[in-house]
Image (cartoon, rainbow, N blue to C red; front, side, top):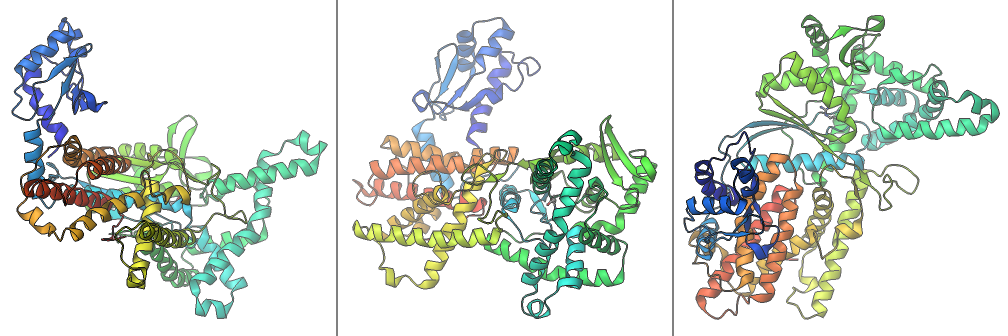
Length: 639
Ligand code: ARG
């Protein structure tokens, strides 16, 4: 049950009757909103002011007219008008109680399936294979995973597709590294480690001069160079390094003519691979499973749902020539300099889809991918959960897709900001590199374990009812450490507005107070412990929920929050914003905390009241667990 929609539909007939015209007052139903201040009610309707303008009447007059023509249906108390014409709406206690009892009996907590289910393709994670996953891959992977879970829960068909970068320069590096620097023993015993070592080695020996030569050719300040060559070279080098770090783009055309011999060699290996060289292709096939195993290991660590498809860039290679031909034939693209093929979007805005040397680009692959996805899955929407830096690429891509004839499909770049260090600068390891994701996650689990142990002893010292430390098995401790540590990392990320940057800070994400996973997981465990302590069977509260009594403001406040679940999920799904769910969790947890303090459960004054409070406790636990679950975060029964 979507609370907001219930209220909106209550008002709709009356609005039409007074002459509300969507052409003149757009989205007047959208002006029914949760109340900014609970003192004034649960919701408020702000449409009287703009309507009055259109109708040439006074706002309070219009407000009164609408109220008089709106049936309260037992859902709301008779509305009141405040200030310049705000209509305050308060749900009736009887209706709240009845609805809570109803959703307690629902295994979906009253959340309806989407009335018009859609098919979504979600493009997420998409790491460049053969480089170790780093913290930059975190956001796409967990935001994408959360959207898959959420949209599926709401009844949509979701196809998750991992658009792997499995055909780029990095394989030329591996092939070159394998032929030049391989440690056979190491490769035999741990191929993934050895490949990672080769990758880093080749990148380093192939990188430095390369960066400098490019910067020297393209960005040199000649006067500065003549005045002080060393200073100018240093400046160029530093800026070049920054540019190289800032993007994952391996389009080599921009690079200057002075080429590092190692870089030259590995690029030739890449070109040979792309041209179908049998030996290089064989090596590529040999490397891929090990690389994928490494990536899947991190996904398992992260508790990511298995992906439906992992059709990487290599999958589309055979289609690229055909795609360019088709785009040329349809006049979507045109011939550029030296036989290249481009798509023009503006005077200074073109995308290259075939280079002079015949090579295809990231854009060509993405166009082929669109065609394949639409032909295969016939989606209503394709979502790209990708870093904000690729905004320009996607804007052009979607324009090209439309010109190509793929209209009527929602293409959406679900963009996100960067993960920064505690100091607000790009996250770095002590030696200046980008931290590997698996190292960070291991650390999170370790800290999760420490936190659990710390709190355990604190609670024991305070006389709380906790199990003896030695009686908790190692397996359970390990499980709790994982649930707490990984949950903390994911929640910290998902609770940020997607488009903002955020600071990766273990202290904050593992705080036991505040809007963190740890806090929610404890709230859940606390609900469960009430049931254990009271020897109550939660199943009874789900199959035959007792009558709900709202005798205390904290009970009412909690009950209203629990009824908002569907409204929140549908808002989060409409804007692809998981942080609406964490905001909601925070509201639920605060309401529960008020309830827990103000309303004794097991020692309530009567059996009826105790039953009602147990129901609220159980429904809180289920709501927290389900909401966390939609974010890909787990709970444990006791902590
Ligand atoms: N592999 C790309 C990168 O690391 C991300 C892929 C995003 N998806 C896409 N269809 N382009 O930058």
